[in-house]
Image (cartoon, rainbow, N blue to C red; front, side, top):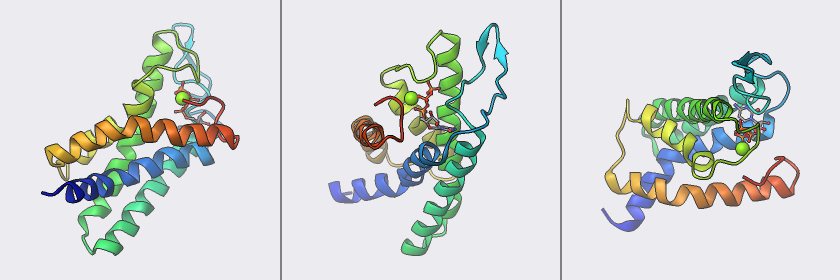
Length: 165
Ligand code: CTP
Ligand code: MG
């Protein structure tokens, strides 16, 4: 595989996860997933994980998979887009669960976990249908933190996010 082929494979594989993640930020808000409930005195997930963000995130990620399917005429991206989107949103939710357990408040930064939680969730669920090549996997892991930080910085400056991470 050439470098360009690796980057294309990585991009098509992970794009629904990126779209799911940023759609949750754009459309999120309102009723929290944990219904304000606490576990051992701390919120289960916190106000940063909402029903709207979760539903819109998975839906927009799936629609991205649909567009990729139509563009490539490869139906694997339909299922893959759905799995990767559910994985991304779940990975982010699980990370929030652990952030609350170690006493980090909603929005508090945990470097690398904040940037990679959704990608690991996406890769794990996506692998049910298609395990990416080692090089595509590495490209996703290596490029995601900087892409994520850049898009979050933009979201922060246009007022979509409370914190720049
Ligand atoms: N969001 C949402 N539902 C989700 C994920 C994200 O509504 N399932 C929205 C929330 O408005 C959240 C924002 O996207 O504040 C940014 O997401 P993220 O950085 O993951 O959440 P934080 O607010 O930083 O909270 P946490 O510390 O729990 O990660
Ligand atoms: Mg955050």
